[in-house]
Structures are given as structure tokens and as C-alpha cells.
Image 1 (spheres, rainbow, N blue to C red):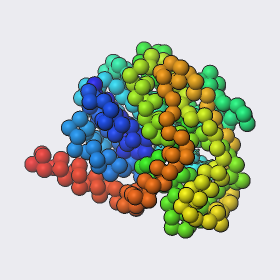
Image 2: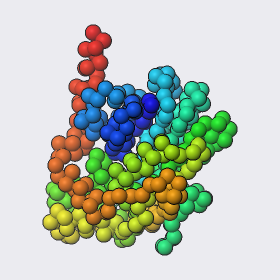
Image 3: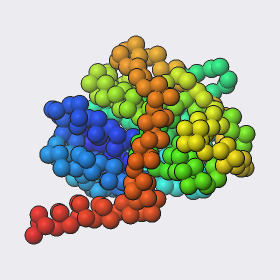
Image 4: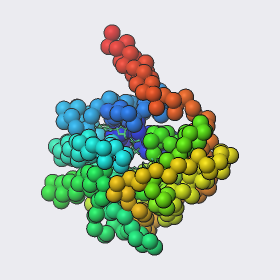
Length: 341
Ligand code: NAD
Ligand code: TYD
């Protein structure tokens, strides 16, 4: 089976590429990624030499590049590629519209032309908006995106469903809660807190810090995506979550305690405009229909995540400084030139 993973140099994508290569010996993976600030090919240096893995630097909004990669003969596409940071979408939503909506449209176009068998679209819990205390959203809940990021993801979901309906594209949508784990770019809450706390820098907490997120360890999500590829029926939508929403402040204090750093590093700052108070999903459908359940407790996952960042300071430095592009140059561009020559 030949699988195209878009955005495979990002956080969840890179974890998923590794998971698939290690667990499915019949699968060949093509990683198609633009390498924005968030995409780091170094995250897959351990599998780069695997004969079943290849990397193509490309943009999902570039129809020609998308067509070229589809011509390799694909059985499945898993679309992770996206602009993903809410704060950036508040600064400027344009790249979010381009990649998250137009990019998805380009992939759907190619899926239609090439009669693709499996299109898995990686969406987010944020399309449902903020969940009232005690409630959790099901797949039937109407979409109510409240940030420009969430609006671009909800729009893409509508295009996926509409193209499945209109053109018969065989598509599945996954909506997952916040992930955490190794290889996440240090602009998101957990890696930012670990990286800053290690250097005794201030930890910005938006508003009162009592907003809740339903954190899922990235390996658990990778297992859910792999099961979706194997077992999901076309047209299905699945929520994926651990089912344990926790306040931001609690997460930050847990990290500080593990690192032996003082709570005085916490700095309350102005709240994010339109900040969603609470995300919570009911994931009983994927548990029932595909037999998925999370296996990593938060206490274990957060320890593994912190330990990983402590042991991978070079990765962190390269991600922050833009040095990761030099890795791409050394390992892919020059090698390709050598092969051509
Ligand atoms: P990320 O920001 O870490 O990585 C995104 C990747 O997409 C990067 O490698 C980037 O280079 C690539 N990319 C961006 N624009 C591209 C383009 N035009 N063409 C090709 N590649 C492009 O993202 P992530 O956190 O791994 O999220 C992956 C997916 O999961 C996204 O669709 C996101 O909306 C969704 N999601 C993430 C979370 C989370 O907690 N991280 C939760 C729910 C859903
Ligand atoms: P983030 O990791 O950006 O994910 P998302 O906004 O997609 O949920 O943020 C997680 C939560 O942490 C969110 O409620 C915003 C908050 N947050 C802070 O309080 N301080 C920070 O520096 C960051 C990055 C996030």
C-alpha cells in the first residue's frame, strides 16, 4: 500500500510516519511537506534511510506538484498539512485560508481525478467551538468555529464532506483534541513551557489559566489514525480524545514540578482574543466502531514528553533557529544532485 502523508515533517505527521513504517511492513510512505517553520525533516532522521520512506518537498496549494505526486500511484492520502497555531491565525489568517482550505481543495481535486481509494482528513476538535462545563461534543454537534484557525479547518471539513457527496470521493474525517508528545514545535503550550522553564524564562499564561484542553498523547492518536486507515468506512467522521479535560494552569504546574522549577516563573498575560474556554469530545464512536482506546495515561505521557525535550536540545535549537533547513539541504537536496549527476 502506497500512502501519501502531507505535512509529515510536522508534529503529528512525523510521529505518524514513524508509527506506520514501524507497524506496517506492507506500507510505503511518501512524505509531502512544504517545510514551513513548523516542518522539520530532522524529526524523521531515524527512518530517512528506510527504503519504504521518501520525502518530497512540496506545497499542497500547488496543483502541479500535487498532481506529480499523485502520479506515483497512491492508495491513500492522509492530510495533516496545515497552518496550526491559533495565535498566528489571529495575527494573519491568509496562510490559513490558503493551506487549510485551498490546499485541501487541491488534494480533493487530485483524489477525484485519480480515483483515490482512501482520503483521511485530519481535522480538529476546534471546529465545534467551546464546550460548556460538563458537556462533551459528539460527531453530530453542529460546527461553531470561533478562531480564524478553527474557521479554516471547519471550512476544509465542509469541502471534504461536499466532495465526498458530489464526486463520490472516499473520505473520512478525524477530529482530535490537543496532542502532546515528542517533536512538537515550541510555540504550543506544552513544549513552550518545557523549553522556557528549563532556561528559567517566564511562562506566559493567557487570562486566568483555567481554560481546559483534553490532552491526548500523540502515539495514541497515531494508533487511531492507523486503525482508521485499516477499518473506517467511507463517509465516517470520528472524534478522538482521552476524555479528560484539564486546566492550562494545572498542566504548567505539573511540568514545573517535574523539572523542579518554581511556580514564580508563571506570568499571567493578556488573554488571547476570542479564547475558547473549554474543549471536550465524546469519542465513544471510534472506541465502539474501530476498537480504539487511549493507552497512555497523562502522568506517563507528560513524563515521557518532558524527558524527550531534555534529551533532544539539539532538535529544539534547530527548530527554533531555522537550522532544520540546513539538515534538509545536506540530506536531501545535495543527495538528489549527486544522484542526478
Ligand atoms: P504542525 O504545525 O506541527 O505541522 C504542520 C506541517 O504541515 C508542517 O510540517 C508544515 O511544514 C506542513 N505544511 C504547512 N503548510 C503546508 C503546505 N501548504 N503544503 C505542504 N505542507 C505544509 O501541525 P501538527 O500539530 O502536527 O498538526 C497536524 C494536523 O493535525 C493539522 O491539520 C492540525 O490542524 C491537526 N490537529 C492538531 C492538533 C494538535 O494538538 N497539534 C490537534 C488536533 C488537530
Ligand atoms: P495551544 O498549545 O496554542 O493550543 P490550542 O490553542 O490549539 O488549544 O494552547 C493550549 C492552551 O494554552 C490554550 O488555552 C492557550 C493556552 N496558552 C497559554 O496560556 N500560554 C501560551 O503561551 C500558549 C502558547 C498557550
